[in-house]
Image 1: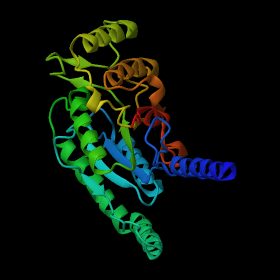
Image 2: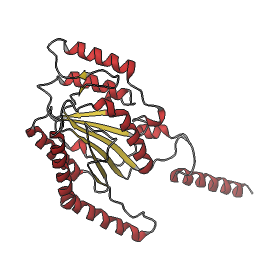
Image 3: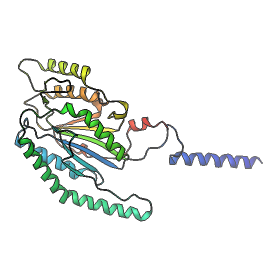
Length: 294
């Protein structure tokens, strides 16, 4: 009798262990699925504040990112001056077979190989054409067109929409820009510029803009918080040394993004392409783990 009870207890313990490992037990320790790939929201900046040589380098940087992201990634390119209220300039979002049986694994591998080949050939050519077309259209624009801050809250809507459609993807935002704001009618209805001033010190510029952000820039709600949506942000500076100090740029933009849920540690700043922009290990983030409550 005692042996039978022990046997039952052992079997029950084994069953609970198995359920826990497979993620069937609901609770804070439920396992997270590895991310399927990267969903890249890429913003290119060809506004008049950037010269043609810098634009050409930026094009190459965007193309290099496109080629090097994982083969099952989704890629959406936007213009930073027009924001997210217009359709993407270019997108590549291949669909892959859902793996339900062993034979599907081979099918998916073949689909990924085809996507990789397209990224190096036909799709790369389409991306290059889209970048050239965007440069031509921006060249015809008049007046200040770089109002990045006005479009940040619309960016939240875009990320929320993509998160709903691509639950298993890691969302990354890339800004290829000098991040120099030149806006006649900013988020608070007043002009804003982040360029160096002959009147004010950089410290005063930072203080003034940060106060305006605190007073008037709308903070993200819990349903559209970038960090809670598992978003990573990369800023690839194209050329800003003659316009503003890097320390000043970081102080201002870190303040903007803090209102959207990100800390300075959540933002990767770079002065050019590097492997960190496309590295992907598929592991769920610590924040995502903290968000699991049931």
